[in-house]
Length: 490
Image (cartoon, rainbow, N blue to C red; front, side, top):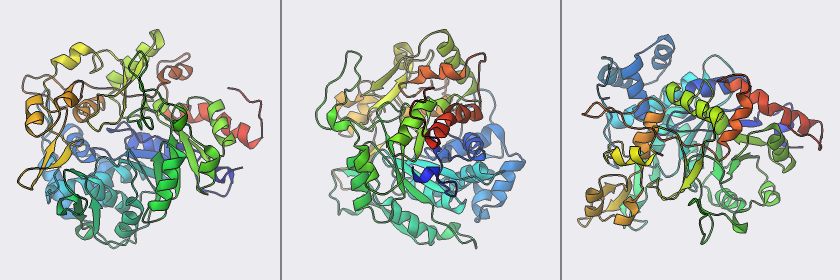
């Protein structure tokens, strides 16, 4: 039927979505990989995730083994000495790494490489399964260092969306050979040949004696058109695609062309956004369907369209192994069992300009009063826009920073309306939110796919569930596809 159904093939039928920040952490990825599927860690903000975990949890035996295996021990000594020597208590603020810029060097880059290495290494411990890492093309500054650390740890797959990462396949090959790389940096106001639009990274200081293996590259796209463009224009091999429908959580691709919104403000997708699966299959690469996959029947339907399998995020986001703050996870599951959780596709929340899913959950940014009470602050800076200043230097701005500062930097006042600091909000969602001077913690923001209420299928007779329950819940669809059972329903 498809490559995924061959008993001798290593292509998984299930990809666990790479949900950031740290919702798809190493415990979740390890659990899914141990079940023979593709567990995926999120690479978003991995450097500050790592140093904040050090401050909260210290170093246990597993982490120590991972640290001991990092090729550049001087980096371990420096980062652990700086951030892991003293435990954080109570409402004491975290010591964070400085926001990255194009000129960042030294400890800032070291921390990214080490953090990415550790996340993948921990995810791969205790089993022989495959592990992937997910990155956002829009988050450009840490990309090369994150990929370097993941490759050093033996990552099997790299998955990237939120853009068209045509340069990444070639970068993977160069890093695997231990060669320096140059990546593009989008700088508003600068021509494509301007020196500011190029980022250089040299992996040499982190290399050990091990022979490195190039991971498979899977592009996350919203259409067969983008898949074809990525396959044609990339500077190296593309090994597959995840075609992500607009029902998926997190960032969504905007509708193609002009579009309207419904009564709730959600963007309306049209005929141009419908995926031609025959055209996608014609590219000759395995592909997985993501967005709204919550049942075995939907898995079977994906195979019937020629897919190698599915990508699933929302069902895994609320399992016991997920990185979501346990108290927040319990609250969401309780609200699901006692009512309905609404998900809105916000056109304003993300400073990237991409639509972003926001779940209506009590005591989170989705509540207007919580949003209004939060002081605007941009101190992590992963989603900042680089721009060319009048003196020719590169500056950084974000629509979620204080309004006056953003406007002084040339930003549009209109862009600040409803903009949310996803960096701080999502860091709080995974239990690592910053404490401010008044002792209050950054409020979380919850992102989920449109079909979050389908989680009730996994909550019958219980208040929580494991990653293994998700795999078991969906696997009947694979059996039906293998047996050619066209009448199968879940």
